[in-house]
Image 1 (cartoon, helix red, strand yellow):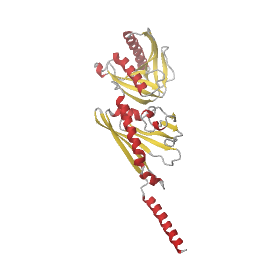
Image 2 (image 1 turned 60 degrees about the horizontal axis):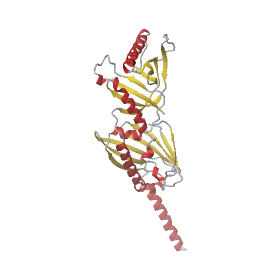
Image 3 (image 1 turned 120 degrees about the vertical axis):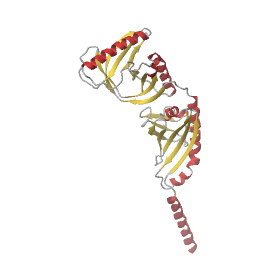
Image 4 (image 1 turned 135 degrees about the vertical axis):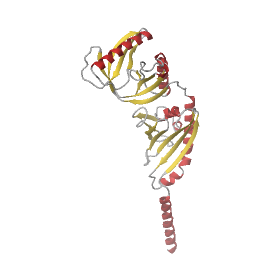
Length: 336
C-alpha cells in the first residue's frame, strides 16, 4: 500500500513538473529564414502583395497538386485572401490573408489552419542592398501560445524552417526569371472621380489624333473657366474603340461634381473606384504606345485580368514644361 502511495506521489510530482515546465515556456515564438535575390525590391514586392502567382513559388503547393484553391477580396493588397482544401495531411485546409503592406519594404500575412486555434503571421522584410540586389527575410511569429502548444513551438524551426527555405529559393528563381520593364508599373487603388468630357473620333493617325485632342481640351478648358469650375485632377484621355482606320476616344478633365452641363458636346462622366495597373512614363507622347504594350505584358506575367477601357492622365502641362523628357504621363488599366 505504501509503495502505491509513493508511486502516486511521484506521478503527481511529475505531472506538476510537466505543467510547471509548460507554464514557464514562452508564450510567443519567432522563426525566420533569408535569401538574397538579384532584383530591385519593387520587383519582389509585386510578388508578395497578391496570391495570384503564389503557387508558382509556394513550398506547400507541391505537397498536393490536386488541392483546391479559391481567392477572395481584392486582387492585391490588404484583404486579399487565398484559401485551400486538401486531403493530404501535410497540407490540410487553411487560408492566408494580407494584413499589411509597406511599399517595397514589408508585407505581412495572417495564417489560418483548420483545427489550430492561433493565427500566426508571416512577414516578408525587404532590404535593398544595391540597385539590383535585395535581401528578403521571411519570418514566422506567433503570440498567445498556450498549453501543450508551447511544446510544439519549441520545434517550429524544424517543422517550418525547411519549407521557408524552399519557398524563398523558389521565389528567388521566379523573380530573377521575370522580365525587366522600362516603365515603373504597379497595382494601385484608384478612387472614383467625376470629369467633364468630349467624345470624339478621327482617323487613326497620330498627328490627326493630337490635333483633335488639342481642340477638345481647349474647349473643355474654356468651358471650365467660363463657369468657374474647380478641377480635381490632370487632363485625361481614354480610347473607347480602336480600328485600323478610325479611333474613338473621350478627352476629359476631372472636376467637382455638378448636376447641369450647359453644352451639347460636353458631358459629365464618372470613373468608378477601381483597382488598376498604373504605369508612370516620362517622355514625349510618341512613346506611349510602347508603355501600353509593357503594361499588357506586365498583366500577363503577374496574372492580372484587365477589364474596361484604359486611360492616360497627362500630369505635366506641356505649356509649362518644354523639355519633353520631363513630361509625366500615368497610364491606368483597370483590373479585377
